Length: 448
Figure 1 (cartoon, rainbow, N blue to C red):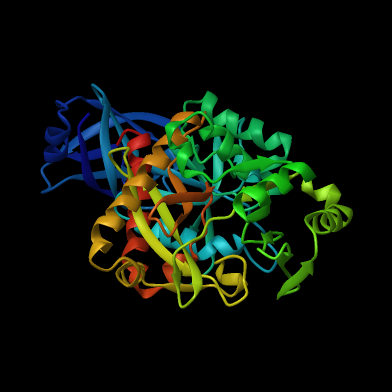
Figure 2: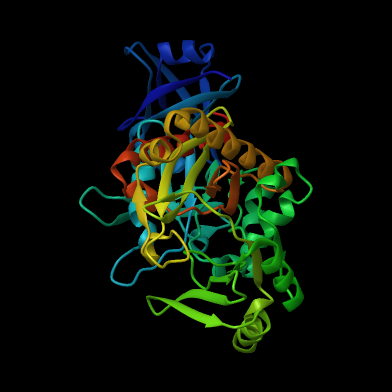
């Protein structure tokens, strides 16, 4: 279908005024009436043809209010039928919202502002929460950032596409949340990134896929015997909460040659180390204090990662879909573990590094081809998860590692990836790319 960038204006008067050049670009004749669609709202009105230069569409104030257009501006228009034009896309960002001391989307407010700004001139993008939808009226109260700070609310039609960025795992596990999202699908409104991934979900998705070779040996709800066997086989085992994030609640179990064993973990902001003389004593102590939690844990093979300054390094790959519905690497962040830390998370003392510098320092003259290999693997992993996942995906964060033999490993996949890697100066261009890709993917899903 034909689409065009268009200037949308709101002015006194009656009906709809459209430039002849816009109608020509869209392949529409010169009808007496035209239908305009914005999100879920459709209106029909008399048409007045103008000879203004460029692509312009002018609505009367009354029609603008009926269409629930939040403001004038530039966006896309596309032909939907012989005499029907759609304005948009209208992109809704689904998130948790509070009003304590003013409207806020918490720690994600800055990101939402950036994303909405990236969509200016080619979409109408807004943030909203589940409580903002009126299904009977088929409307939503959407929030637009103000340049002076704060948010302004506008009543809108249901959007063309929904980007799910709910910040709370607990909120998404509520039964009503599933039925809430299903209501968009029943109205043929695409919604992507359905929910958070649990670690066990990702391993189950890929267990029968050829890309499973990149996943360390992993067991959900491990028994004592399973952990003993893994320690004997691999020497190092990580215990990770299946629904955890930011490295919280992780234990690193190590078998030493002298038949000594060590548990490393982080507690109250400090790295802790406890030594044991046998595997049974170590595991029995862990199970005694954590038995109620370990049924939601995963035991994962430890990998001997490449190092910088004698500290392990892994990589966060921020993957997005683009306007061609293809997975691309938007940004890569190298993360070096802090001294004595069991993870590379910045919150646990990890440090962001230049990815290119790490590859040059580690692989020398082979750095370019090694980087291409890891990028290609990241795209393959995203495609593998997507083909085994029942819902739409548009964004994934991977924690990938490279062992000393050059093999690529995937430790985690996140459907709601953090954005801390963009704090490194070398990742700034990737931050903009990730925003543009998300808007372009929304345009693709809404058929603009």
